[in-house]
Length: 80
Image 1 (cartoon, rainbow, N blue to C red):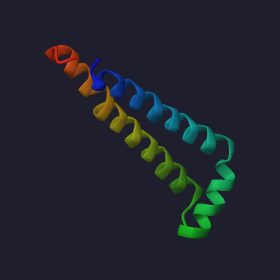
Image 2 (image 1 turned 60 degrees about the vertical axis):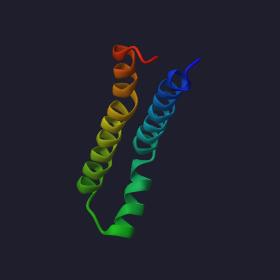
Image 3 (image 1 turned 135 degrees about the vertical axis):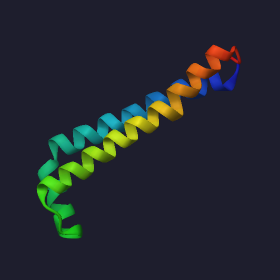
Image 4 (image 1 turned 180 degrees about the vertical axis):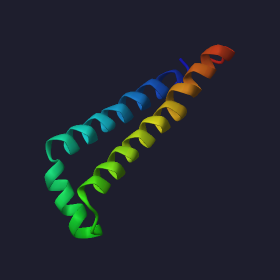
C-alpha cells in the first residue's frame, strides 16, 4: 500500500485535532490567555481575539492546502 495513502489522511486528522484543541483552549480559557498576551505584548482584548482567530483561520487554510489538496490531486491523477 502506498505510504501517501496513509500519510495525508492521518496528517489531516492530527492537524484538525490540534485546531480543535486550540479552539477549545481559547474558548474555555480565553481570559487567562488574554491576560498572558496583554502582559507579554501589551495588546487589547479585541486585538488578541483578532490575532488568535486569524491564526486559526490561517492554520485551517494550511491544512486544506497541504493535506487535502495533495490527497485529492493524487486520486485524480491516479497516482494512488
